[in-house]
Image (cartoon, rainbow, N blue to C red; front, side, top):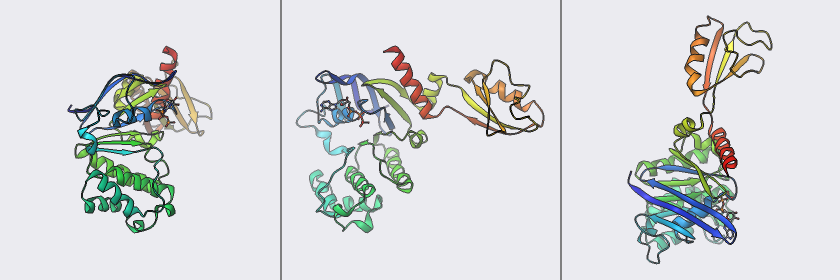
Length: 306
Ligand SMILES: Nc1ncnc2c1ncn2[C@@H]1O[C@H](COP(=O)(O)OP(=O)(O)OP(=O)(O)O)[C@@H](O)[C@H]1O
């Protein structure tokens, strides 16, 4: 992996508050990584450290081969950032705002203005930002962050306020950027939408990194049960199929579905039993643990060990 960001044993303290505590990880080219955690877990602090807006109390951060907090940080122009609470001058139009940031980044104006179309703001580009909805301001923030085709894109809760269609467009844009080799780190509380999008997930709790890996890796580590849902014909209201082993947790859903909690190493055995049971099984769904469940698991685990 070619690392674009290296976080090594980083701690950031604000007086008695440890916003980040001994965090280490590396992010590579083309990675789309979700940073998740409760309010106050340290997500924004990590991004501010990567941007060089604040310095670590201890440990080191390297972005594009350099210290982002150094005065002459050469990589700054290759960084895109969408802050959590994006705010613009309400008297300027979308075009004027985008032009302002293009000048700041010394990037070609036409390309920067075209980004307004990319994020679906073309028709509103000549309107004042003061008349924009929250979702439109968010899109303008994304257009601003995309100026200069950044090699590292840091997005702090970027989909808050976006409607489902815009979320879809938003993910298409950042997936393309990652496919072109950019490193995209995005913090979010919208776990369901991240599940299919993020190649990797970093979970923070009270400043500590408590899990880091692809969803499949987190599933293997957590060893949470997969749920097997079966539509079984001819069962009485609370009856369970005779082939379900007695040491297995199972329940009835909606009156006609049998749901079985299958430990990872028993999943195949239970499916064999179900299919060997004759024609009574009419349908099967296999539901692996969701990101929501994995997140809750790793938080519980970290609370127990702290
Ligand atoms: N400038 C500051 N001065 C004092 N404490 C701070 C400062 N910035 C952050 N903190 C504290 O550091 C901790 C981590 O905050 P941070 O903003 O990184 O959390 P977060 O994970 O981004 O939360 P959210 O999901 O609410 O945005 C919190 O306890 C916060 O109150």
